[in-house]
Amino acid sequence: MAVTPVDLTNKKILITGPTGQVARPVVEALAKQAQVTALARFSDEAQKAELEALGVATVKADLADRNSLAGCPKDFDYVLNFAVVKSGDFDYDLKANAEGVGNLMSHCAGVKAFLHFSSTAVYEYAGHEPRKESDPLGDNHRVMFPTYSICKIAAETVCRFVAHQQSIPTTIARLSVPYGDNGGWPFFHLLMMKEGMPIDVHPEQPNTYNLLHAQDYIAKIPYLLAAATPEVTTTNFGGSQAVSIEEWCAYLSELSGFEPVFNPNPKAFGALQIDTTRMHELIGETSVDWRDGVRSMIQALAPDLIKS
Ligand SMILES: NC(=O)c1ccc[n+]([C@@H]2O[C@H](COP(=O)([O-])OP(=O)(O)OC[C@H]3O[C@@H](n4cnc5c(N)ncnc54)[C@H](OP(=O)(O)O)[C@@H]3O)[C@@H](O)[C@H]2O)c1
Image 1 (cartoon, rainbow, N blue to C red):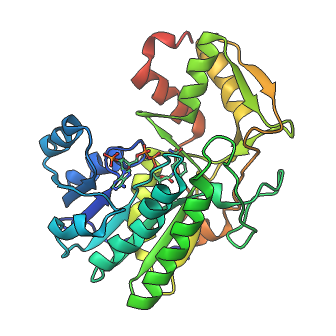
Image 2: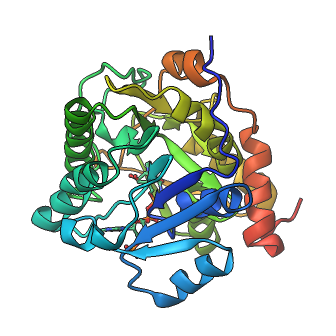
């Protein structure tokens, strides 16, 4: 049976990585009901000002540097850790992503629950087999993002270590392919189709994932927080429907008239469908049909490209 979601109304919530693709819609939604603080390096001051205009408090800090957290309050009810960096420099990326989650949890050790966003990029490639949480891990995204998978695996381990040491109720959610009205992977594919650029796909087709719409991941956050335990709950987190790059590009083609040009490449990321069993038991099914989500995304970002 699914957990009972926590009530976020008027709660103090710290959101890291708030300017990123995934967290930005979360900040916008939660700012309407809770007291949100957003933490990032904010190298772009304009992004900080945009968040403040939403009524969000901001903290400028680098998770790689624990001293920079000194100015960050500690008395949060919940922490959502979306921050990620993929500079390609192993020393810095491990420090920011892996030590970073440790620095953050140690700083806010009194929270009711800590939610760490991980990625299905932690799984070893295994063809079309839907990945279970207990399946082997591997350096999945090396080709495009050299430090990413290793950092996400390291971050999960540090996260579990601190949760166990300090009894912090924690959930680790391994995201599949997030998207929404602010973009995501299918939108990049549409732009590539428009320019006639070949789209690399793994030759073991179809390349299936679990597109997860922003509306769904926002709705599921209170459930993921409710599922947190000091032993740490680790769950896949994707849309309940499995859908392949080939299918969503065919639909993008139907909408826009642009034809995808696929380039089978053994070095491309391969299929990464998730096993949804644990996710469904804990937090229930998602509700946005991927076709509706994709159409809405194009309508929001490039309405001129919709022909039908
Ligand atoms: N996007 C996807 O398709 C996808 C798929 C699976 C999983 N995920 C996971 O979802 C989460 C969010 O990803 P995203 O794609 O939204 O990331 P993103 O767009 O690259 O944004 C990263 C965010 O983290 C902040 N940040 C980076 N380094 C930092 C540091 N050292 N200290 C503090 N803040 C830092 C950035 O702001 P500053 O640069 O200003 O610090 C920015 O707000 C990550 O955990 C990622 O692994 C994403």
